[in-house]
Image (cartoon, rainbow, N blue to C red; front, top):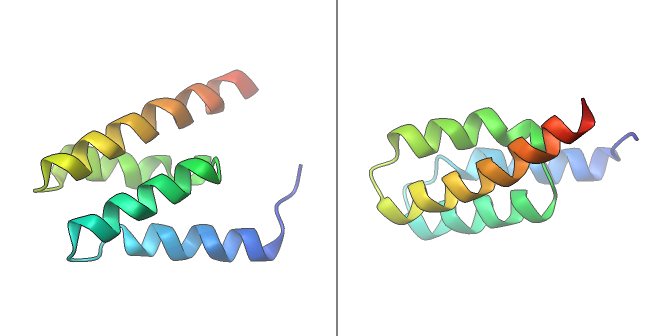
Length: 76
């Protein structure tokens, strides 16, 4: 299954927003990446889970990472 370039751009946009200074913006982008099933965001989410100063962001990243991890491993 190939992604449209529009979807790829939306995913790239949300991955970039994971570095926003506002924790709420980061959480919203995590939620969007999860809705998009953006498995390519897994590494960025893992980085947030390990290093983000905001507990809410870390929890959201952990949840999204778990869901995407399972999706990645179902493909194999």
